[in-house]
Length: 282
Image (cartoon, rainbow, N blue to C red; front, side, top):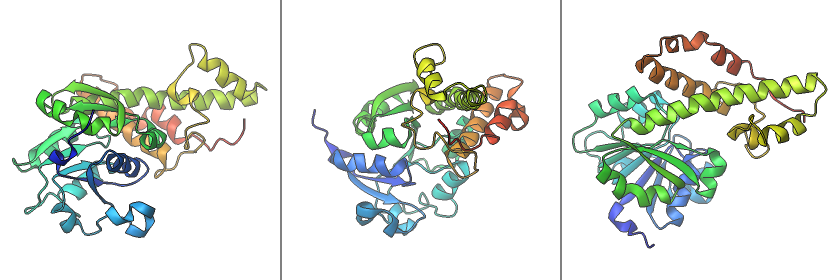
């Protein structure tokens, strides 16, 4: 099916890191008109540097639609309203798609601050940088049904599984609940691999058996494919980002009536995540 890409205008991708950059590149390959924005200098983006705009004001006036893939809520508000302020008066942006993982209530806060002329859609994604490079991410979309239908060709250019989750905020709710399970599996897999080594069990054999039985997980089954699978916890690496995702999930759980969720900072899962050491032995 041929995509009528011109009707989307120019798509700006903000946050051209491990996820955002390959997403932008997939859009370019599909024929969309794309520009990128990041706080890093253009010379760090290789061949894509020609499509990067360093000035936030010029970026804000070069796009019809913005896909935000920045790290967290603080960076999202900086991008939209504060430090970079690309949604300030004078912007040509009329659609804001949030593909970062944020607490669902942050999506509500964004909606309250947005000018009424800008439509807000939450479309967080899953699949890791490898999935972003392959263009087979999973998107969880919160929007009106008409918006979802209109935007499907855009998401299908970057992803393989596109799910309509309901109205605004539903996509983010699904994503953070998914990530709660994902964080749990990361902690569990790393703990049992360490235990296997201490018990004299071949951890590679253990992972193979787990993948063929009830211990199968996305993280464990793809341990050798995931670039960050062996990382130890650092606040600014992927394991550290999982801590942010866990916090967002716990906020959602709390708002759903889970009385244990507000204490996530002291929770055993968060503590175990912070105690993960680099893994360098198979």
